[in-house]
Length: 271
Image (cartoon, rainbow, N blue to C red; front, side):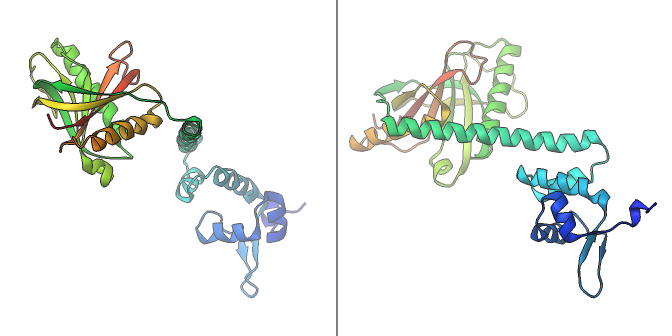
């Protein structure tokens, strides 16, 4: 009986068995994912062992799912199944999130093609307000996670201190956040009094201001419609003032549910 460990497969046979092209096999060799069992010193021809078929098929499946090469290597080098499965599960979660975002973008485009919803713009004077706040430099990739963490922390402070809120959650977005893709954001909650402040939470007194306000009630992907509407209105009326845009989050039910809200887009204007 032939010793299985002595059997070598030509690259052509190995390609047929794994559905990997010769070009792909050479690439995976170059990047260190799948080393041939032997390379002929004279011809440079690559040979593989039968037991390499399973790893090769795994590589093809993972690459079909767009798993980056370094993470494919992490799967192949995983010390046990649990470690391997964690890498794969994390990537599947990312793919699911990307699919949701793609579907949201498709639905948003369809709504645009059907005609933009009319959004009313009103002007409002706001008094000076005492708030507890968290600030941080944030970019487009981290804004949602930062936003959730900041308001989760602020809500926890209100619950544990017993301090009463006097208005809805809000956040300041400076112009540079939009123009440069990053900027210092401030998440805040209006309060009746300032409790003892833990960690990064600070007391911020917001000055009185006048805003043009448009309210968005729909998917977050369409929030730019409210920005466009209010921005166009203040430009046409020549009343735009310097300062950050403020978003206020009007709860639709439980204020602890961070994602169940309507968003007011408040654009600063001259009084």
